[in-house]
Length: 140
Image 1 (tube, rainbow, N blue to C red):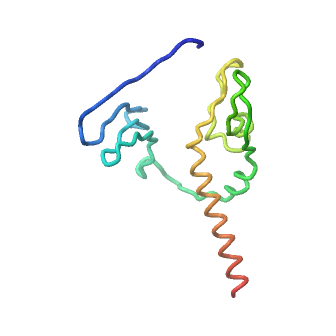
Image 2: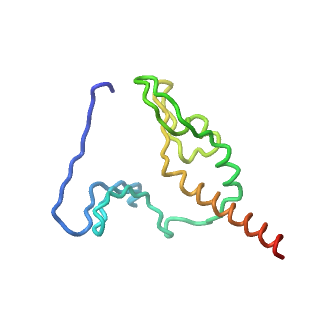
């Protein structure tokens, strides 16, 4: 893929929200790239409508999984620049929902950091529950 560059350009003078791309599966929109009319921010959307889901269960081990993720700084081999993040292969063993494995041995693995958000929210909720229990035990 060296030297291959692709670009998608879209501009609009509309003051309402714009849709730049829609992604679908089996006749249902599963994601989009849009512009927020109020802030002009670009939004990268994954469908999350309640009508698309069933059997919603809270995490019970989010904090444990978050603490197992090895995050840190690293040096990119191709140019020596410093980066920050995780290793996709390691994250895949902890939370595969956020990882796109390479389809071949030569294809690089990728991480969608936004997919970590539900796990992080679950970890914060678990910490709050632990804190509340400690406060109640101390002040009870």
